[in-house]
Length: 101
Image (cartoon, rainbow, N blue to C red; front, top):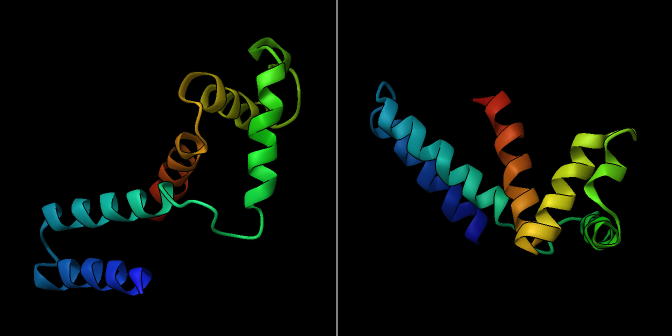
C-alpha cells in the first residue's frame, strides 16, 4: 500500500505543474528517499547484509585493488563509519536514479 501511495504522490506532483522544476526535484528526492531507505526488501537483501558484515574485518586499503572496488569501499564506509546498510542503499539509489532523471 505504501508503494502505491508514494507512486500517486509523485504522479500528482508531476501532473499538477509538469513544467515546474520544483515539483520535478521534489519527486526525485521522494523517490531517492523511498528507494534508499528500504529495509529487508528484495531477494538479495541477505547478500548485501553479509557483504556489510565482511567489511568490518578488513581495512579499507584491502579493497583498493580488487574488482568492484568502489562498491566494496562504499560498503566499508557504510559499515565502519555509519554502521548501517542504509547509507549504501541511499548512495546507490542516488547513483541509479540520477541516470533515470
